Image 1 (cartoon, chains in turn orange, brown, green, yellow):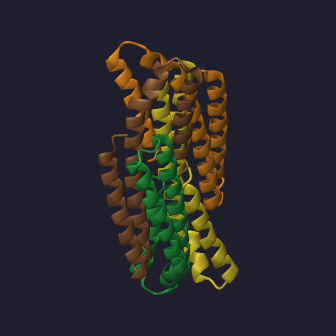
Image 2: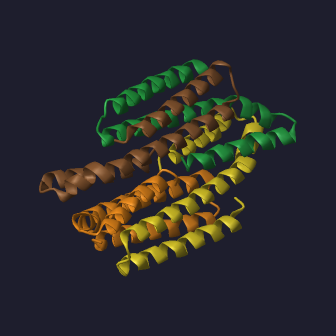
Image 3: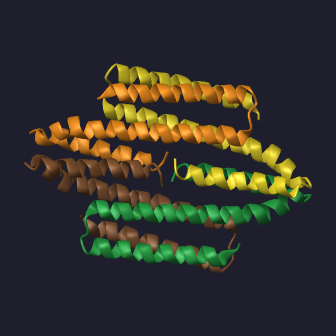
Length: 89
Length: 89
Length: 89
Length: 89
């Protein structure tokens, strides 16, 4: 995983989430809190897409070019599973 | 594309959508209409996942096992793109 | 429900869905089909938001200004339910 | 905002997110990371729904029962806006 950029993004999300916790502690307006939570989710979606992109270009490519049929099927099944879950969260 | 099952599912969605149109024409309760639209979206997500699964096992596998680097990169980029869009709809 | 515009939008979605069915019948490229399904979902989300807006300005406002506590609770509970479902589809 | 339960949930999400950061630092398998991010998003959706429910039963009810038309319109518009955004994240 090219994880320096992913880590940086996740730490930004962590800071954003701490800000939301402070908003709730400070009795911020509900709708403003919801909007910030939605912004966090958009940022997490971006991180997931980035991780998937790296995964496709490394593990998935290696597996598909390899001779292990079970491994090829496994990596492809995982892609479908995270895609299907992405439509639900 | 193993498209017989996909076609069957899409035609079921079409019937469902016509039912929603009749609900709106008949002044159905708004929340009931929204719930039916959400059910249609869940069904469409299922169709997309199925199409993606077939695609991974055919075109994507062929491209990645092939010698055309640009083609390999193209098919992987498309997967990331539809994944990213799936988090937005 | 201010349903003329809603109906028009749903019929546009129906036409779009028929186009997708023809694409699958004609063995269109999988990713192109998925993208069109995602476009349909985005259009359906827009319809749901419009229906919700009308609902809030009519039934919900009437119920909340009324004296029936059970009815007030019911309409508010429904809003939370469709919101929660919207995060899942 | 009945914020004790909301706060507790958000702090649980914060712990979950720190766990994901450690996974990335420890070079965890990409798909496992994506799945944990999706679990965080599901938890955040649940928090948003809970905040919305409280908001409907407090601020929104007060505004709609009040005499300030602009205020009534404002709170209803916000509901539609967060609903529409929830379909996009």
